[in-house]
Image 1 (tube, rainbow, N blue to C red):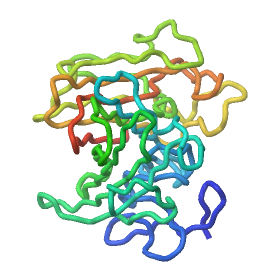
Image 2: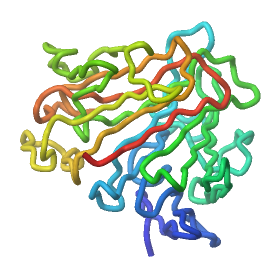
Image 3: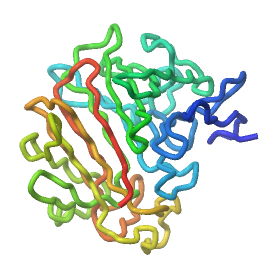
Image 4: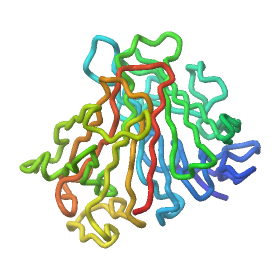
Amino acid sequence: MAVDSEGHEWTEAVVEDGWLRPADVSGPREPRWGHPDGMQLGLHPLSGPRGLLRLFTPYLGQPRDRLLNFIAVEPIPAGASERGYSELERSRFDDGPGLRMWATDDPAEAEPRDPRHPARGTIAVVDGVERLIVDIAVESFANGAAVWVRAEFRQDRPHEISVATHRREGSVELAACVLTATMGNWARLRALELADRRVTAGELWPEYRDIHFADHASFPVDELRREGDGIVVSAVPDELEPHLAEHAPGTKEHWFYVGVRGVQTWRASDPDPGLVAQVNGRHTYWMSEAPIPGGIAFENFELVEPFREGRAFTFSAEPL
């Protein structure tokens, strides 16, 4: 029988009616949803830190348990500038690192359920397109924010996921709720495609050699590519064969890229004039002094916009 990252047995997600979903059985089940051969979403205790959405892209040639990126939830209360951090805060339920996330049929619930007993999600037809919709509750943040996330897959777009944030009852007012793709370093994303230029990590932080994060670089909405009534911003690697890179001695094997190259993209319809695209960078891998092959690369990649209830952004990964 399959086991989770903590060694507990569970039933793997199954393909049913064209979608990958948690199995409709009793007992522990893998919290995983999406396209059988396309973009997939997972939650802890799939491998990786708690407090993060997991994005899997098997069509890029990665094995089943190798994810491409994470998405963290980082709300900013009204009148504040500091974010909450779903990955880094400690849970008030068990004092472990990372806030709890669980798939639910009732987004209003504030008490976490066992993530090994996930809701299966809902299949619905919207505007003539079948969709798989998954509601994910998030433990309340230390800054008073209480939010949940709706993830949505479209049958006709197998390489993307839409993620939308909602305030839960009792939450403080929010200035923003950032959904940030946190692990650009694994794919070694180094070039940001803007409306009329390409900017690279090396140009943004030419002298940075520390083991922490290089400061955010921000790009306002008028510097982003237009697509209909929306904006698009993409981050791409600069290596033709990233899986063949030579790593410094002592680099953990989980940092070795696997699969073909891909372009990672955020899209937003009807952008607020205050929307910005942001990236930060790292010279070494996260929680490591191992230098990244080829030099500094983007780590977090995000859109930041004044909070709107139910506002959705779309994340995609396409092979190059």
